[in-house]
Length: 248
Image 1 (cartoon, one colour):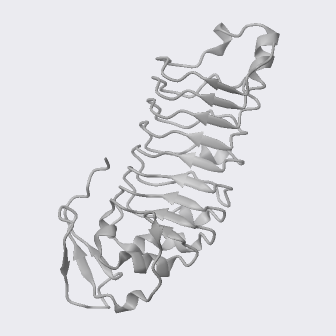
Image 2 (image 1 turned 45 degrees about the vertical axis):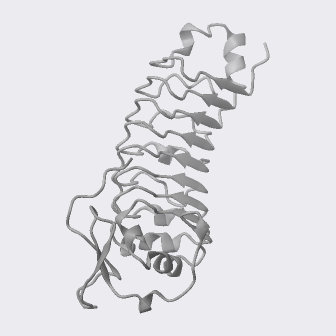
């Protein structure tokens, strides 16, 4: 009974994964053990369960379901897509020691607690969440591509943890209040020397010290100069006090 390397169950209105009622014989279960890629996207799944037979699984797509937790995933995963769910935490990721690509865009994350130290992650997508800073991302020495667009990051200073990501090549920050600052590209490029592209464009090189401090209003993309006071300013960018924009 040959098993396909990839199985797609996309848009099947699946609520839970109950394989025992479908694959009953040892031969059928053996077929599941050969599957390496599984697509369960665009269903109604609320909880991860029933994936134990997929012992060879390295890639799974769980995007656009109703997940609130990432616990219960197969330990051998290298690629995990879970965008467009209802996640407020990524706890459970620490049990995936081989994970190299993670997409949790379009969720409800306010932090990235749960990422293991010295994780092998090379691609991390965190767009359209509620993250106020990059805290917790400094422990990703292999990270090359990071998407943080449309979050709540107000100050360039809040990106300082990324300076320790010495392999980071591509960063997306558009849609954050900090991206409204007229010299933010130079500031970020100076902060992260390894960076090659920022928001899809080459990183400009130069000194951010020449930039005059600005205050950015979150409800208005225009910038208003403020008086320079190095003892009070946390960074060349100060955030407005109004409520942050809601991720699209």
